[in-house]
Amino acid sequence: MRLVVLVSGSGSNLQALLDACRDPAYGAEVVAVGADRDEILALERAEKAGVPTFVRRLKDHATRPEWDAVLTEAVAEHEPDLVVLAGFMKLVGPVFLARFGGRTLNTHPALSPSFPGTQGPADALAYGVKVTGCTLFVVDAGVDTGAIVAQRAVPVEDDDTAETLHERIKVAERHMLVDSIGRIAREGLRVEGRRVRFGRP
Ligand code: GRF
Image 1: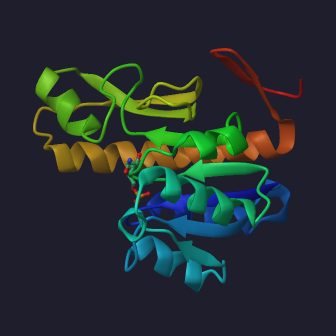
Image 2: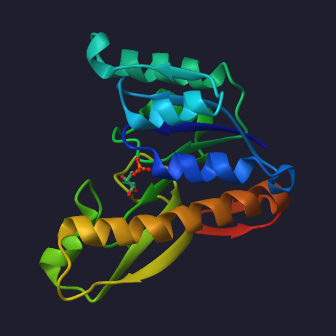
C-alpha cells in the first residue's frame, strides 16, 4: 500500500511509520512526504530515510483554492492508496477531498468528539477530564469531525502541563497510527457512513 504522509512539525508520527515500513511484512510504504512549510524536522526525517519530499506553502499562492489544487496535484503525482495527515496543521480543501476523500486519515490528540482543533491537550487539561487520548479518523470537510477509525485512551495526571500531557498522548498516537495503518494495509478499511471497520468491503 502506497502512503503519502503530510506533515508540519517534528514528525515523530512520521518516524514511527517510516520505521514500521522497513519491515516488508508491514505491507505499506511511504512513497512521499509533503509539507506546508520548510525547515521542519519532519522533512529531515523523510530525507534521511531516502523518501522524496515536497513543500507547498499556502503563502506562495494567491488564494486558498489555488493552494488546495496545487497540494492535491503534488500528492496525486505519487499515486497514493492512502494519504496520512501526521501533524499536518492545515485543513485540506474541497479539491483535495474530491480526489482523496475516504482515503485520507488524520490523527488528533484528543478523544473525538471532545476537544477538536489545534489545542486538544490544553483544552482537555483546562476542562479537567481525567482521561483523554487520541483519535485516527477519515478526513472530511470539518475540523476533526470525520468518521473514527481508532482511538486510544490516555490518563491525565495531576501534575500534567499541556506539554507533558501531549507528549504522553503522542506515544499512544504513534502506536495507534502504526497498528491501524498496518491493519489497513493487510486487511483493508470499510467506511460505511460514520461506521468504520477494518476489512474488505
Ligand atoms: C500530533 O499530536 C498530532 O496529532 C498533532 O500534532 C502532533 C504532531 O506531532 N496535530 P509530530 O509532528 O508527529 O511529532
